[in-house]
Length: 116
Image (cartoon, rainbow, N blue to C red; front, side):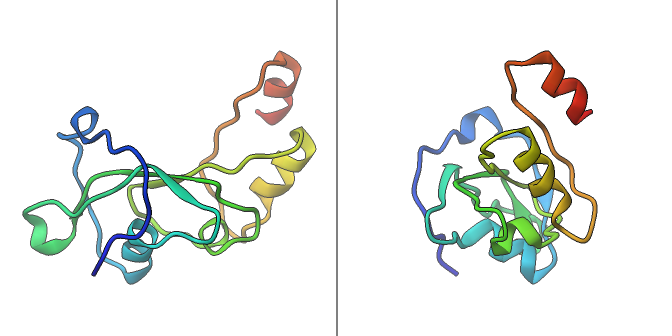
């Protein structure tokens, strides 16, 4: 399986973090990018773990409604979605049919309070 994507790899920061990957969707999330996406941190398969051990990955440019946004992957991979405003961010977060972990970067404390 080939790894698709590009970006700066910062493996040294996370070299001791190891995660086991078992399901096909997890492997796809760690190896295939949608159009417009790129790797901020490209995951890589690590030795050991029977081929299921991966370093973490960070995907940039994830679009609302994309496969990665709407698929529960359970892999060591994070997708960054840019929202136009707080209402858009809340809609993006509430779009999948399951609960996802999310974070918000905002300069307005009122927006952070509303998000929480």
